[in-house]
Length: 370
Image (tube, rainbow, N blue to C red; front, side):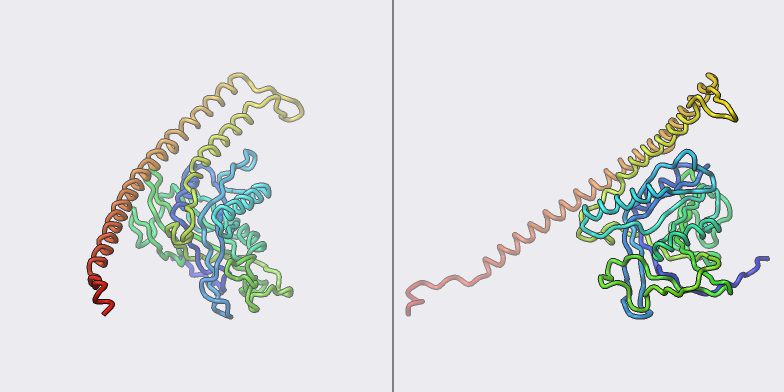
């Protein structure tokens, strides 16, 4: 049997997450690039209050419309750990500023995402601790987890090939299927702080909310005497996948899908750096320098070529096919819009002609004088 654990109920700074389908496609493609190692990226968007500014009325929503991709350093690549350097975090902040200037809408780093290849979508204790560290900088910071290449237990009530919001074992998640990659699950979460007695601690005010120009409400002020957290637990946040126009209305479209080509370059550079490190010599082993053996260099070069071929076969060629299909779909949609525009213009001209012909005829000048 399963033991039911009772956790204290607590409120999180964040109420929901809305991510555009284009940003989700880029992040999911990143997660599906490898099933041997975890990957990580940053989420760009803003945080808004969808409720109000009075006490008990705040409903903060993290809106995500872009992602920031970074190359994994060879020294920190691991199958169960992900890290991001301060330089990469600063680069993501700079990218958010460029998007703000391009779109004319405030954009900043609002969260992070990483993958769980062949693992459950539930955050590990390391994920919860990492999320808590990020929330010390911004309590509205959110984490996304992609469970990929997972062919284990099927979530009850979710059929293969569906994409819907489900609740299983108390967790809110999105379940999808990727051809040839098993079931894909996505969840959004935050960390909740507990004191030494196991009581839930209230969240701190968020770093920035776009529609709070005067700052947070009085009930969200920073408490300098807040107790230090003793432990953390995670809480899932509802996530919604929306069209880009819903988050960026009347704005110039953000070329988020262009990041898929950047992802190609990042993957190739990761493989190249790993290859160069494997054949670099002299290498220090023990107390002396050891040159790379010629056979080892030939073997590593063959592995490098195999890795590039795998990227070409498993990622680049399918990506080209997908983008070509999207191009055909959008061109078809564009032609339909142009045809609709032509019909509307003809209707306007017809209505104008009817309006002109329905006016009464002008009277002769002599009748007007009389």
